[in-house]
Structure formats: C-alpha cells, structure tokens
Length: 467
Image (cartoon, rainbow, N blue to C red; front, top):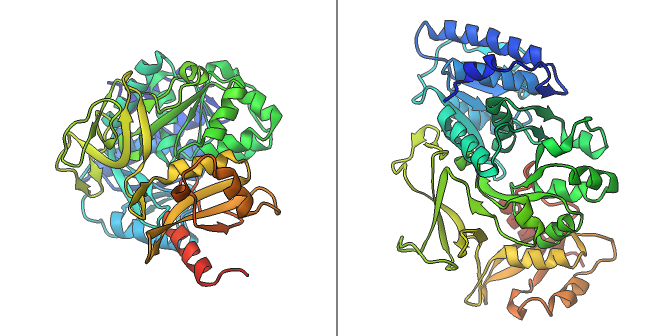
C-alpha cells in the first residue's frame, strides 16, 4: 500500500493539480513534513487542527501530517465561535494550521503552537473527519490512511479505473471533497479544484470532461440544471457522482432527460464516502436505486432482532467495510465488524440497495408509519416548490401531525394548489396537515437539512400563525 510520501514522490506530472501550482503543493508538503517529524522526535506527535482555507495549503498540510504520523483534525475555517469552542474543548490541539475564528487568533499560514503541551492523543496516525455540525454538535469520525485507501481501492475496482481524474467543487475538509483528492492523489490522476460559486457563474476550466468524474450534492445539481450551458457542460463528464443527501425523483428524471451520466451514491463520513453506487449506464436505462455494493464493503438488512432479512424485505441497514471509521474521537467502537446505521432499506434480487428513509425521521400519525422521503418526493414532483422538508409535530389527537415546510416557487403558489395535485398521488393520511412557507430552509453545505431547526420554525409558526 502506497504511503503518503511515496504517493507524493510518484507525482511526476507538473500539471496534476489543475488551477493551482503543483510544484508549490510538493514544496509545502515536504517542508511541513520535515518540521513535524522534528517536533515528533522530541516525544509524541503533535495533535494538529487543519483549517487552511487555501486548497493547496490544506491538501499539502494534510499529506505532511499523515506522512509524519500526526493525528490531524480536519476543520471548517468558517465555523462560528460556538462550534470552535466545541472543537477546542474536545481536541486540545498542539498546532493549528490555517484560518479560524478571529477570537482564536489563528493566523493564515502560521503554525500556532500552544505554550504548554497537551495530553497525548489516544490515536496517533489517525485522520479525524468532521460529521454532524448541522445540528450544532460536531463529531469527528476516526479514520486512518488505510481506511481511506480501502475506499479508494473499492471505488477504482468498481468503476474499473487505474487513474481517477476528479473535478472537485465540494469542501476539502468534508469527506466528499477529501476522497476526491485521495482518489486522484493515490492513483496518479489529475485533480481540478474550483469553488461551486465559480462553476455556477460559468468560470470553468478548459478540461476534457469525458476523462473526469465530478461529485455533486442534489441542490448543486438542481442549480446547474437551471442553466442550459452548464447542463450541456455536465453531459460531457464521464461520471457525475451524486450524494450527500437524498435526491428527489423530478431531479433524477431531469438529469436522465438530458442524458447526464449520473451515478447516485450511498455512503457517509463513517464509511469514507460511498459504499453503494448506481453506475451511469444503469441510471440512464431507467434504474432508480443507490446501486450495487462496492467490493470493499458488505451490506446486510436486518430486523429489530438482528436477523438477516431476505431480498426486498425492508429493515435496518448494517455495514461491514474495510473503509469503516474506528469510532468517534476519542472513543473507538467496541464492535469493529458491524456498523448498524439509522437508515432503513432493502436489497433487491440483483443486489441493488434501495433506501426507504431514516428510522429516526419516521413519523407516526394515527398509528400509521410514514417516511418523509416519499412525501417530499411527491411534493417535489408537483414542480410548485423550490425546496421541501416534511416533519412530524406533536399532536394530542394523532400523536404527530405531518407538517410540510417549503419554499414556494412563485409568490402565488398556495398550499391548497399543492394539496390538490397530491390527492391522486398520496393516501389522504400522507398529505401534510400543516403547510409552512419559508424563504429558505436550513441546509448545510452538503445539502443536509437541520431538522432540529425546522422543529423550532414549525413550533413558532403554529404558535403565531400568519393570518
């Protein structure tokens, strides 16, 4: 298995990092590696918070930290004071690289060293990737170079690629952006990095898209499909990976209509990105699912008693994977073999994974179990909303009352109009009782909704309805 420094030394192409200086990347990585190994020579490798805003410095620092066997915590430089407080209390770092909140006096391109050494990290050589955060609680999934490489190997084997060329518009501190770098860096491929806002305004690199893969979240895909030129640009890519949040049927149909080589994926921070992916040819032929399981992973569907279910039976998704995180910092999982998650789904006869919804998102109204994804998809299909989320609000008669929080596409879009279109598509008990229009919904950069915040919005609205 190639170690970080070996991969760095194997980068013979000067232009592998498109849009940035490849030589500068190499130089920063080598210099910081030497500094970190010298610090480690005096004892335990220092704990590093990595919050570099500039992509070359972020990635070069990441490789240097991995090569020097330093525990490294990937962080979002735009976190607020409360989030940074959580991180500092949890991590107690020795070195901070990059920009953070001004209150913490984290200066750009400086190494801030604590005046007193902190407690040693219980996990040297580990890579901590943030997860959560949309609910205000940041956790770090504990990964290693080996778990990330296992994900890369499963990916390349599944797609039958020797080199992976990636076009990255997602945050590098997030697993979705980091793994695009890992695939290109460890296979000798090319990596183009561009902020999504630049792509939206048409500032795109002159590359041969047919040789590249791009990863998007559903809200990004939706925005690109609103621009005919960018839609045409997307059709040229070898593969458009889609993940981070559930995609709605209307969006998938639109992508299929334009013959975009979409690959809907299923994965998470804890599995170092996808463990199931629908290949573009399957997608274009009309198949709708999260695809087959990648070679480095195994998925079983179990009932509440832990028994494995047969094909097409809905149950709890359990994952075994070589790319599985070891736990959440600073605690490792006791059972390293199986990882049962909150999602419900089933495997069909061909081994394709189908996601039904989240167990914790399940709404019980009048004794009926309802999964918001089905209702949200039906509401999206009316083409009257720009965004939608369905939640359950406590109700003394029904247990929970279905509540739709939505962004109307036009000012004259009424809830009644949407309800009328839903009557032929959903059972009566599945049509939301309350409809709350909003100007925007609280989503994070990966498109995941903050349901806790939605509960507050709904509670306030229903206490003080607009008359």
